[in-house]
Length: 263
Image 1 (tube, rainbow, N blue to C red):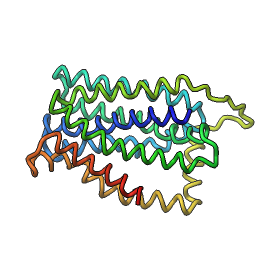
Image 2: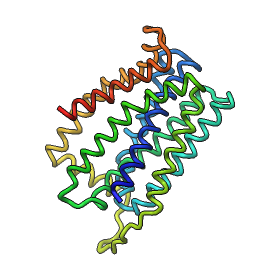
Image 3: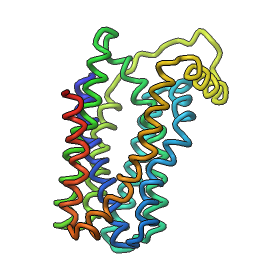
């Protein structure tokens, strides 16, 4: 089961990085100002920042398989909608930002439930290896997805990239649909959303190792996000390059992640 989930996750992650690269590049075509282009990155990450805790609590108090299935449907619909609007030439900057926000909200629900699901399909002694494979999947997707997106954008524009991302979600949905999760009879009353969020914050507060990881990650992302946000304009205006070069630049970030993991 883990193998099927991992393969579908790799395919979906490639589609996600293709989509993110195409969305940023699309904004350089619609409204090529630093503010508007950086807002695409903000619209992608802001829902994760605001909704990650409620999303994690939701994964704890509800059936994770159902949460993931609903999230996949939402992500498919939003990506397909953006693809149709772009292909038909109806997309506007505000539409791109609104749909990107909606996709980010879906990811904020999807990611915690996905991560919490892994221990259910992997033996405890193999959990570190499965986490390592998850990291590999992310970096492979970051290295390959943007490069593929650049080629497709040159050939047919950003619209087909969004539609491909929507199609990549279908594989995850099918695998989850076929998964027969063992039902567990609860011995305690159902936990409420607010109390689950408080419990998560309290756990991080009194776990020094986890607190250190979160602080260091936040410090890195705070400054690195400027690179991710403005890289489309650097490629297009400063370097005078096109979508393929932009995709290659983003892909180098994933390649660097793979090399760092190997070292």
